[in-house]
Length: 191
Image (spheres, rainbow, N blue to C red):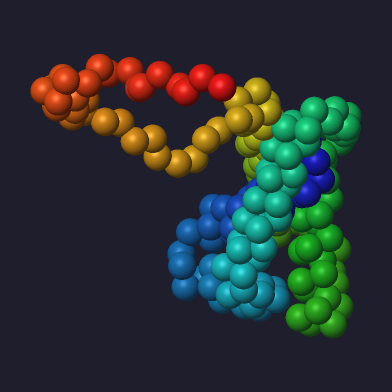
């Protein structure tokens, strides 16, 4: 799997685990909105833009994977999944501390013991594993598509072939016979 495919999916998993953690810890929508606003989560309104960037990156990565398979290039070995699965929890903690530092100008170590942070942190591993599994499935599907396109016949004609109905040929034969001519042409003059 390439980083161009895996990283966007890990970011989506990170944000999903983050959102579910806050939703689980603070079920009341008003209380959750207030807590998110106080802790510097105002950037969530830009989530559609982030998802659009993720889709563009994934499309580019999958297209590159299809082209590599068509050309017969070998794929590079992927980093071990266990290593990639531990990046989102680390990124989640950095994100939480950074949000609070940018919003309030300081960070408290007690942030680690907030229920939303603890739940969000615990959800990062399952969401990361899900993102990695999805990346693996998409990468394999792109390779299969590329191999299928590579083995497809190369000479493909695009155009139309005129097919004359048989009745037209029969009528022409009948006219030739009626005039006393043979269906063959006249003999070639000898030189």
